[in-house]
Each structure stands twice: as structure tokens, then as C-alpha cells.
Image (tube, rainbow, N blue to C red; front, side, top):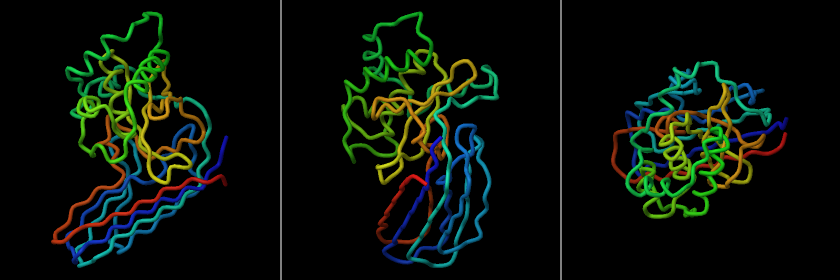
Length: 261
């Protein structure tokens, strides 16, 4: 087991005052069997009396709205989290996990992905985790990382067609490949040491447990992977989302760090 200090900071500067600023935040470590939150405190400026709860996937969620004019929006989360390199037990039975086997708008396969997976030999003896290792290896060889090459709503098919993307795209593509073969898989948003920002990977269900795979780095997850949220794809796990009324440009700065405790 490793224990980590985690800090997440979000700073938004608006070119002119905005009002009616509604936001939702999933930047809090998720309490799980393999991940224990020892402490977690947060600050939102300007404070707007937001409500803390959970979304339909069990992720910790903060929702708030500020109607007063403001030019800055600041969020800081400080937490201490203990993580073990263990598979995550799933309490729901197989038949209740169908949403994780169905393609979403962001993970639906098109012609390019269908052609790609048709060329990967199948081994009927592989269990879901073994098959995911094969698919991850093939994806890693065929795709490259390029910062800024895609956006939040870029689909797996679009990213794969252009041959490059970021961690979100790697996760979406591997989800698409696995779901095309009937595997039960989910998207994970979180962070890892040394990145300085959030990260994305995916998990595969097999015999009542979830196991993590990081296709961006072609590896299985370990005790250095801190989870914020899980869902069908990135839209279910958005770390921060907001709408507001006002004109002017918006500048956003995000920092997410993990250090040994």
C-alpha cells in the first residue's frame, strides 16, 4: 500500500465579469475498496454554497452556482489517499453491468476501428484481462500521443483515424475495441505522479472484479493510480464543467500533483 498527498487546483480567469455561473466538479478522490481516502478538504472561491453529493456512478460530486459578478473562479482540493495494487470488487451482478458493454457516442466503432480489430487474431481461450492486454499492445503500436491534437468531444473513431491523441483518446479507443468484442469495461478519470495534470485510463470486469489498464503507457495500473471518477466514457467523468453568462475570453489553469506521504 502507498499513501499519497494529492493537490488539485483549477483557476479560471474571465476577461470581464460573469454571472449565473453554474458548475459541477468531480475532482475528489473516490472512496473504493483499493483506495481509501484518509482526509479531503476543498475550497471554492468565490464561495457559493455548493452542495456535495454523488452522481449515478457513485462519484463524489460538488454542484454550485454563483450569481454575483466575478472575474475569477478558484478551486483547490487537498487529500491524503492510501492505494493498494488490488482489483476492485464489483457488487453488482453481470446482468446489471450492461451499460458498460454498450457503445456510447464517444466509443462507437466506425470503419477504421472495425478494420483495425478485424486484423487482430483472436484466442478463444483468453479471458477478458488477457484479451485487453493484447488489444492494448496493438493500439499502443498503432497510435501515438500528441498533446492538443483532440478535444473533449473527439470520438474514438475520429482520434484513431487521425492516428494521434491524448490519454482520453487512448482510453476511448481501447473501450471501443473491448466493447466490440462484448467485454464489460469502464472509463476512469484520475491522476498519476509526475503528470502535473489529470489522467485517463480504463478498467475491465472479470469474475466480479475490475482491473485497470493504462493504454497511454501500455501498462496495468498499480498503487500510483488515483481515481476521481468512473463511468461509460469521459462525459460521465468530467472533472470540471460549468456554464456562465458574460462576454470576454476565459483562461484556465489546472494543476494536479501526487507526492508520497
